[in-house]
Length: 113
Length: 110
Image (cartoon, rainbow over all chains, first blue to last red; front, side):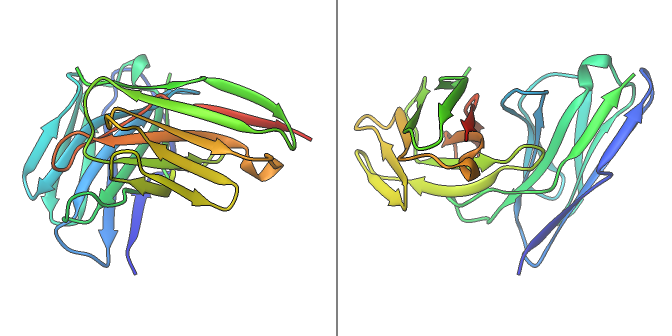
């Protein structure tokens, strides 16, 4: 069966510090990968999605970036965090075939102080 | 840009009352999915609708996709405390891209 792992689960970072959130998917190949952000009590905002290694589509201009160094690995990064970057970050995957379910990781709570 | 709005944003109901959330897209959708997020958890897939005018049921939940494929609804009959959470619709607007709605947070009072 397929699983998705995301870490760290929680982190508190000072303004201006770097960020790295990592996500891996197991049990499937060539998945579509996504990063979403959910501000407290708010909806899900699509940040990045990837259909293959090294292929990243950015949805929202910001100081975050994403990379896909391996087929089932998706990384969300920032060189300098802002207070507004605080939120709940969710990695997700869907099968390569179109129109399929999105499966979410457990999420990472980021607080920028 | 493409937007998917949901109303209401919040809904408090007494246990046993019905609940409906509505999802509206600014563009035509290929399909629409519904997800439930329990407090403190991550969204979990509920169902997918593909055809214009499609209606699907899961026990007390009824899902409907509009004729124009730009809106959808989720209706819960006789809510229970286990229904508490935030309900999201998600519309497929491109080959691999899903845009989530703003969500409706449901609170059920026992």
